[in-house]
Image 1: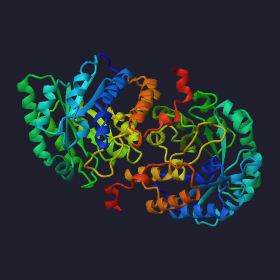
Image 2: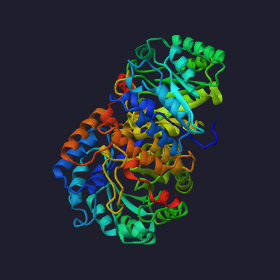
Image 3: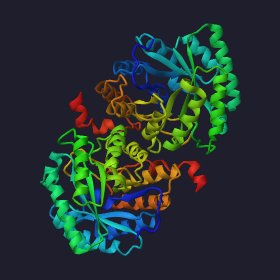
Length: 309
Length: 309
């Protein structure tokens, strides 16, 4: 399924994490144009939507149609977010290659976001794994530890609790786990320490860093995780995104800034920078009036990289 | 002179690097209010101006008056930029504690900025050192290697040339050297490698990192230098600043964002965050209409740090 093996894998989450934080609903046709543009720019793993009830997130009500279109792009890993067993059923029906279940390390955030305690969610993960296995589906089950570095509702989140849930998710049958700074509270020291400890538990199954740039430390946090060996990161074109249940959260790290970071350091991501910037310009038109972020689209590539290209 | 020894030293350069990039001239009284506000916020090293000819930078023509006021603040290290021997004479007369001479590692930038080759500047450094010694002054002579990571005019700058100039500056009598990403071209890998190599030459005399956030990597680059042992950084309130001879350069890393970064990691900088943010709000009024930067002033401190405070 994955034909190339770039040094760093960037997973585009704009169509899910980005669009769910924006009140307007982007028409399906424009989502498909975004999807195809991202694919053309070299992105090979895209979270295309979420199987949540449409009354909760009408912006993502067309997720099944977007998955269907995405599955036609050769070599693309199509992933969706699922909040629970019901969402997982729909994900398995859709034929998506991977489903991501968020597990809030913050008890308070878990109750607000999913109306379940973290341990209830662990039980749900086990049920999803059993469902997936009984269906004989190859769909990858990934668990994202959200609010792993702090929470706008609860404040501090204990690293020991995060690590207990990492172990719990693996025990419940998750194929992969990731650590997410859902609300932009992390700093590089915290990231290094938690990724090191989580990797000691999960090994290669720790396979995603998800950072928001709310307080300007997003890229530095990506680098801190990278320093511990992490090579797969979520990002969102133009840095849009957030969490509806975490007040103040805004802005994933921008895909184009991450692509620039790794290209500058000589790490292949498979991304064509000019294609990505051209797509960003189109997305900016579709989302006119929304707050966009990211530095490189404004400043342009340095002369040193233009010479190399 | 320096009474406290914080884990990390942030040198505020807004009154020089910031204001020289802005067309309007801030009245001396407001500069002094900024200076006193920065001191009240705990900053203990401030670059207060530049002894360049007033016809070139009328914004900084009152530098001598600002130095005079700054010298009255107990425990403050007062530094000034000097472009040449003539500027150094004025710095020594002013009683400033430190003078910073920029040495462009880019030949093309050096000619554009100082109308001298880098080797001409090395000769100037030796003359300044001789002048300082003959005057019996304790004024510290610091050399900032500008465009050390690339140049908007020349493009690539060879690391070997930067290191040759680091050695040359020390041989010419500089007390300290620093590495500056004047135009925002650096990436964390480049920063780590160059700081490691420069430290092998200069040891503890390598004592400053100066990073612009032009392409969003400023904080990550600070962290990369920090990872090699660097503990002193330039920054500019509200992230203003640039270089008039390096087109496209804009925005030092924001002082308040660096203060937040280090506070979050538990490294003392001696900075009172609330005082600093209050000062930023006043400076924003004085500079109304200018582009300000920085994330933390917009997003606010995370709940975890408010609880700790």
